[in-house]
Length: 256
Ligand SMILES: N[C@@H](CCC[C@H](N)C(=O)O)C(=O)O
Image (cartoon, rainbow, N blue to C red; front, side, top):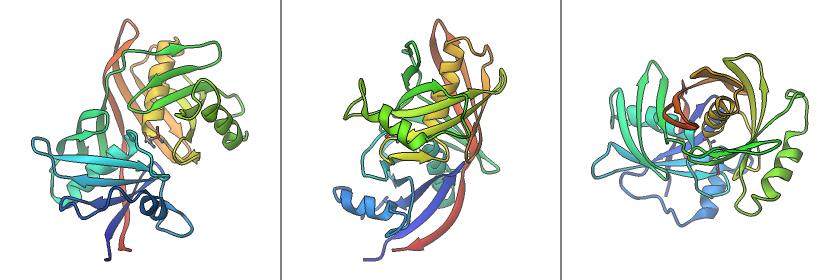
């Protein structure tokens, strides 16, 4: 049976999107999910997102990494809001359920503001910071950010202690100013660098504030795929009212 799909991208983090409100997609078939995300044999994407009905909220977002594993995806959440608008499920505001809980969002002229989970714990270590923004993120500074082997170093950290099999996404950061940080992310589940990671840049913005690299509450994160903004409130090392802001665009639609 042919399946209609839509391809979306949010600052170059790209997704196969499927309207699964009729529950026609077989979620147990992980091999098929990896096939759809395969850049040589399938459609090609960093992840796959299903939009499903929800009893009390506008929709539910079901996210899979390219290898079929599951977590929360910030850029995917922004693309899901744009897709829900295209499907006529929402107008300019949305509430939806994802693996990490309930999210609010708004969309205006292709820019999606997505509320992220509150963060109550940030771990500061000698050479890195670790926190969970819906997905786990290791953050460390990298001065040679435009010219280093991110795949090799990212994989070593992702598979090493203390993360081991469960793994962590790995973000490399260079401070440009009090309000701007350059970020490159190695994503678990894709097992490579992606052009942008929404939960990753959110984690970087909060981490930079936590360790005193900035006192600002609105930060621009410069990714390989474009700029994102993160706004938040902070109190005694905890963060709430956290928003990820940036463009989400349809690329094309097809059937496979
Ligand atoms: N690209 C995403 C993060 C997706 C989940 C991540 N790879 C994981 O498994 O933790 C984002 O934009 O947040």
